[in-house]
Amino acid sequence: MDILAVARGQRVELGPLDDVAANRRAMLAALEAADKPVYGVNTGMGRLAGVALDAEQQAAHQRNLLIGRAVGGPPWLPEPDVRALLAVKLQGLLAPTTAASPELVKFLADRLDDGFVPAVPRSALGSAGEIIPLSHAFQTFVGVGTVLDDGVEKPAADALKRRKVKPFPLGPKEGASLIQGSPLALMHAFMRGSDAMQAVELQTLAAAMAVDVLGAPRSIYHPALAGPDTVLAAVLDDIRSRTTDSATRSDLVQAPVSFRVAPQAIAHAQRTLDDLAVARDLLLAAPTDSPSFLDGRFTSTAGYHAVTVGLRLDAVTAALTHLAEISVQRLHRLLDSQFTGLNAQLAVDPGPQAGLSPIHKRAAGELHEIRRLAAPATLGSLDTSAGQEDVQAHAWAAGEQLRAVIDHLLSITACELIGIAQAHHLRGLPGAPRLRSAYAWIAESVPPVLVDRPLGVDVQRLRDKFAADR
Image (cartoon, rainbow, N blue to C red; front, side):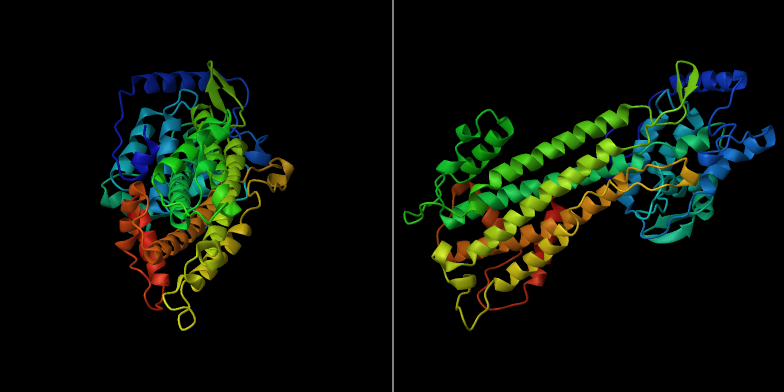
């Protein structure tokens, strides 16, 4: 299943569910024959796992698991994120270790296809695992809670009625399965990973254009200087290739450090994203239910502890923070005639005009916000559930923090590209052949700054272009 494609609206195509049905029958038979407690099925959960449930209590238990833990509130996840979360959970339900019914699998797939968007909280989720957001997501299947209709909260029961669908009758273990695992962390790994990759690609473009417009020496970008590092070699070669036939200035012996070390920072960001993708795929393929149905037996797991994904989301945040620092510094150097030989602050008429100094201050403010978000968000365990759940991996928080950092970095990148375009205009040269289309692409939304004007709208127009090209 292509999680990103489903997040963006693609319909779900299920194959035959015969194996799912057979596995479900085997699990029910094992449950019937079980001579000991099965966590969350015939017992309570968390600190109350030692409480045995009678037949009547078990009949209501799976529904209660969903509605009794939905303690979150807005802000809610945006629709694409919710769709990605549901798609990850669907993939988990198809796993034999989950032993879900074919009916539940199809119900979830149908809700993805008919645009059913549960209201899922995105913050203040202090549980081991993700029971709070998952309760919000899947209580809607039994007609409880709220969904989002064009961003407006509506009762889930009404949303099901409009679709002529009855609330889903949960069978044994199915409520527990719906709130187990870490699909929220995996959603962030997919969605924020994709967003971060675009931000890195734009930073690579900005780095090459900055070299071009400064007229910086290009020998430092020779791929042989990467040694055995193939990732860095590819970045160096990319920047050198994009700046082929750039007009190098004879008076510039060495560019500032922010121009020279960009490939190292970009390569590191790419590596952290690759590492995140590996961790994501490993967790996606692993049993995450607790208990899981493994080799005909019920086995407790720690698959809900998404520390491997959370700490890698934090690592991507750190890598993007460094890219942001470099970008803001490059922009400041471009405003300085000492480095560029161009008009001070890239103003057409310095003094009477402020030029682009204010846009650097916007970028500096965005960087200040990023630096406050750079501390690892995954860390921070506390006792919950009377000490039974005494460690959490706040991977969801790492994802939300990365979301914010990407947003600020894209604004910084827009500011730098506007500065680059202005320097290109003042330089009066065509630029490197492979970058001319990029200069034209910026100019479509941001014309040269000939007189002072409010540039906030220009930053937003460029941000809108980034979003349209995602």
